[in-house]
Image 1 (tube, rainbow, N blue to C red):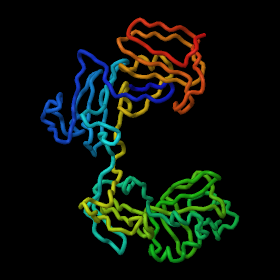
Image 2: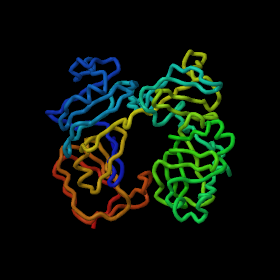
Image 3: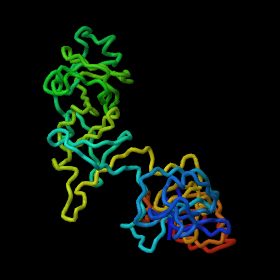
Image 4: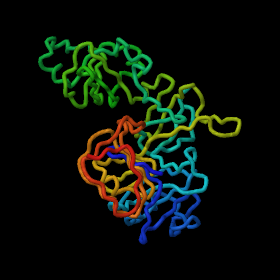
Length: 382
């Protein structure tokens, strides 16, 4: 049974019946030259879905246990009561064996770059990196383990302008003599194109790019001035440069070379295999902007994902057979008409997380059941 939550989450697994609806199937062992309308003639790729057209009521079903590393672009809209549904199929479907649509790419083919640092070729910009499902930080300094390094404080103002009335307040550059040490030597005094993240106000950090560095004055020039004036003794940190990759659990991507550099958290070899000859490390890079892109389409339902409604009637109009409509413990005004050949359950009185009952929902209006069946609980009519 599915759950539709008024002002909250909708989970859908079933497709409402329609004489014109078509079920399409996608499986890793399929073929894009097939018609896609049966298990045995399933399509193979998401790209095939992206170039196909669908009608309200259609469903696109992915085989459980299969995996796709492509971006799904939803190009058609459904209608109220008959959405386009993306869901799963297979006799072995369960929470541990769901189909996977991922914006990540598995990275292999690593070679040693220097000591514990390895590199691999990646032809697309890397936005994030994960190892065995855990997020890995971009190379930065001070390292994540030492965020309060006193060397990385804004010393300012400009020694040539002690009052800071012009240059410093422009926030086009900041001063920190602490960079003129080992880090500057390690980076050969070249911080150009590095990312810089500056605390400019309490609870506000502004991100910019470094355009230049003067090792004598310690001046870091910014590509674009900050919106707020940095203050003396406020902190900052640098990232996104190979010379900053100096600790375990960091990575860097060079778009010009199309090379990804990585120092594993446990100092391991990313090519290592376990006793079953399986990779010890599953290294995944986020190279796509979206896993699933639906904007600006409407009445699209994806099994296991969320959707919000502002009224009971709107939730019911989008409900599928055996769906459950949940609402919070609050007062709603308006009538609701059940007039579709589906069976739904309507429950009220939930907390803000829709995980537990805390009371009843008060409906200031009328209920009419003209078709289908409805099971109601946790409501008070006024």
